[in-house]
Image (cartoon, rainbow, N blue to C red; front, side, top):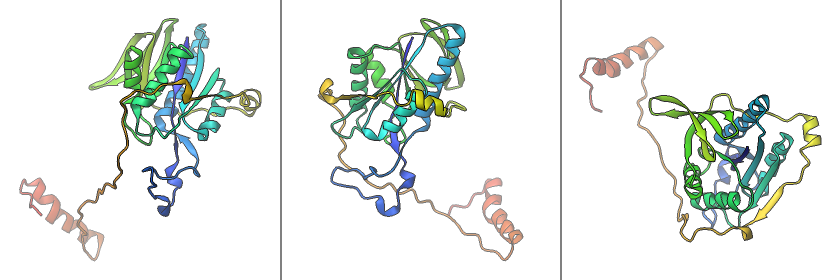
Length: 271
């Protein structure tokens, strides 16, 4: 069983100062000097893959973990960590341009990689990245591959060499289903799935393995794809009322008499 985890490392924008938020001619904010981190969904997907590998070993089901990112060299530290965690192959595809708001292009690259370079049984992706947040890439990749897509997954267990047990969120709770491979799984709000840390010995023994780097010369982007045409600031200011009073008790009385009591009595006053 071959599992490919696709992830996108996003710059840690919390490290930016207010004066760093400057939009350049390419409609981007320069984040080249900040650290790239995994988003919560990507981190969950990678740890779920490792847990699946642990469970497969116990059942005697052979499983191979692989990792892929379409990103620049900023993703290298994460790829080295995955090597130390004993992912069999770690691959980085160097894009020509920034594909931040182009999920169709990213999904096309992923599907081409699987078909032309390394056929997989399962593709595991986070539901959406921290920046962009389109939530389209897993669905588009599944459509291009012609595979079923299970969304909002919270747990994955091995069933046998051709099936997985996937627990995922549905409208009225959770569903637990037996899924036949090949398939695409989009990871949602999975509980307690922080990516584990490799030991120092594993970093020395496995973390120095070469990262496979491919260029866009090996891939062809679809003729029609999304193009970023502009950025604007969204304002989310909300109206508020400052309650005056000499003491907490006086303020609480004003809060009740003027704001809560009219609502509770069904005679809310429009302001």
